[in-house]
Amino acid sequence: MNVSLRQLRAFLAVAKLQHFRRAAESLHLTQPAVSRHIADLETELDVRLFDRNTREVVPTEAGRYLQSAVGRVLEELESVLAHVHSESERRHGKVRVAAAPTLSAGLMPQCIAACARDYPALTVQLHDQVQTLVLDSVRGGEVDFGLAIEPADSEAFDSETILHDPFVLVDHTSGSRRLIDHQLATHQVEAKVMQQAGHTHTAFRMVEAGLGISITPSLSLPASDHLVVRPLTPVARRAITLIRRRHRSLSPVAELVWAQIRETAIQLSQARRTLSKST
Image (cartoon, rainbow, N blue to C red; front, side, top):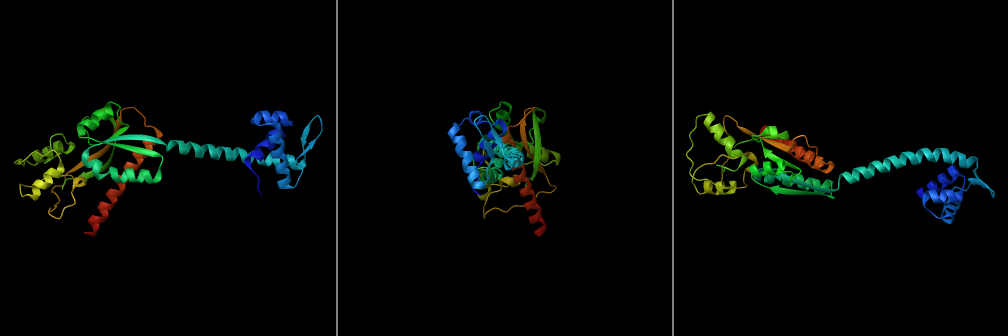
């Protein structure tokens, strides 16, 4: 049957108010438009829905049954449509995320691609920054949240650790340099620093040139046929942490991106476990 929601809403308004003009006013339609909707509905159903006279419009028996049944159905439908609309609104907008360089390269591309696939109306704007600027951006509210390397000032943020990234010379501004220096000191290793590099790619090219070896987080490993990677013993890891301003809730769209980054980290951890078992 070719029955429309407009016809059913017009029918319910007339049945409730028992008056075409008042029904038209309640629907913000003209009276002829309401009369046409009722006539079309009666034609489609092949049944008379109202008894009319000069003073009143009264539902017939079929009309009373339809009023009772359709009223419940439309209420449920309106609730479903409102919920869908709400979900749609939650997936629109822009989310700003600050991330340390190795995390920008190692985690965020997969996350941004997944968001573009699942939430095409949502834009993720990545702020690729050194660790100190990531923390400052989150504190200052310049971004919705950040992806950092176990920030030293953890009391300043609400945080969630999503990944433990193993180390397999980073510069002083990176989040990992502090952790590497601590591990070397813990094991009483005195490392002779040959060069200070501002980017991990620079350090890798120096290793390729035979200038020494480098310690780096697993997420920053380059795609190179000229480097050999070996695990460290004992194993040392850095905690990859999602951070937001303390006691500040995220917007619904920012919550979606936060959850997607967490899911990306879980998938990476599972892939690593699978690889380690196979080797």
